[in-house]
Amino acid sequence: MSPRVRSSIAAGAVATRSTGSPVQISAIVHTRDSEATLDRALRSLRWVSELIVVDMESGDGTREIATRYGARILTASPAPRVDGIRNRYLTEASNEWVFVLDSDESVAADAADAVGRLLDEHAGAFDAFAIPRFNRIGDHVLRGSGWYPDHQIRLFRRGTVEWSDTTHQPPRVVTGLNRLLHLTPPDCLHIHHRNYRDLREFIERQAAYAINDRYPTDPAGFSFSDALARAYGELAERRADAVDGDLSQALAMIMAWDQVIRGLLHWEGLEPRPPLDASAALPIAVARLDPQVASRRSRVLRMRAQVRGRLNRHPKLFGALREMRRRLRSVRGEGA
Image 1: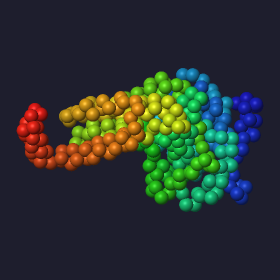
Image 2: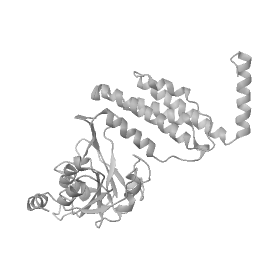
Image 3: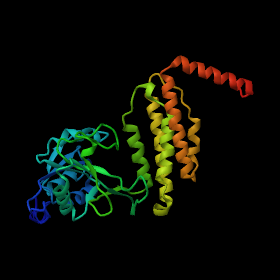
Image 4: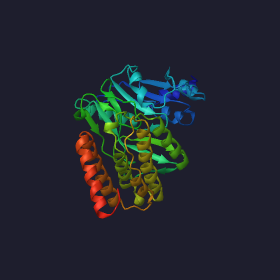
């Protein structure tokens, strides 16, 4: 490490309690070809007492940047989802408290003081803290529902948090949700996430997340209506024209279709594959769908999925009801 960088790191603030004693915190950052964002991330973590970078065989300058910041670098095999390998490296932390940051995230300059106060006031009652996160596309910081406050469980007592091998699902607090504290914005510690350069990158990454995710394999638990319900829910939740303008409309449609795509990928992996009612997906293409209509549609589809799930457990009853429905249609002249 160069003398200039070493002195810069040493000049960083240290998280301390009200007594003035330092808080020993281990920070873990996962990387893969992260040179474009990693310097900002590690610079914002100069206050931690242990810095660990878990690198998935980067081919750019990622490891050199981590070395300049004095990080302990661990090598991991490339994986489609970082969530699935987080647990393996949490045990590498030598301190009681762990702070997890992604390579395209950072925290503000006063993070050391904020973390010190947080642990000073709440460490006795809580094992984990959900921190609000600012997300951005290009230069636009998203403020709409679904994008903010976007709480992330990133500060926790070692051994109390566990991730599952799936994409963008919150980790489990092993000691119970009563030991998790959600920080209340706006006057609290925040994570700053530079997510995407533009919509093209957003779409590419959402498609990759969906393709590489893991889906249940039990056909009895599948309902495409459930995926459609989630899609309409995304439309209802993500639209926030007042704060994010037309961008929120675009993102709402992308996230709605993301649920449809996930439903289809889930269905394709089932054996045997249940009937696929895809016709109901078409209205999702309506750009100006009223949020209340979308929300009602979501509830109806969820109820239908629940009913279908119960009927699937009683095939004779399900068959009788289908036959009754066929006869009613025949009487009405609707055809079979």
